[in-house]
Image (cartoon, rainbow, N blue to C red; front, top):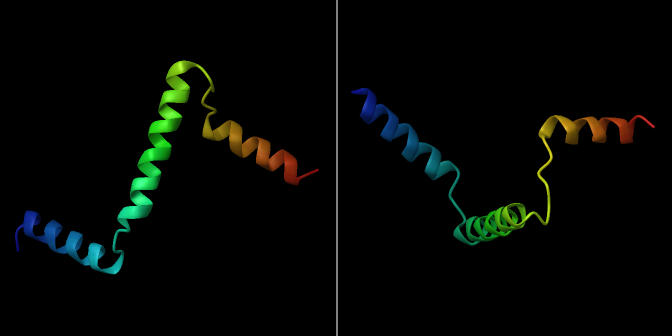
Length: 62
């Protein structure tokens, strides 16, 4: 089997075991677009993952 056919077979297998939920996907897309607009307008500032995890670690070590 060619690499391309192998990839397609694995992709189909994964799709069948993890079916997509379009309503959830659409909600995430809406949320992503809302957050993108907030960042572009300067209403919020993104926070890096390292900073987020450090704050979580500090909070639970108190």
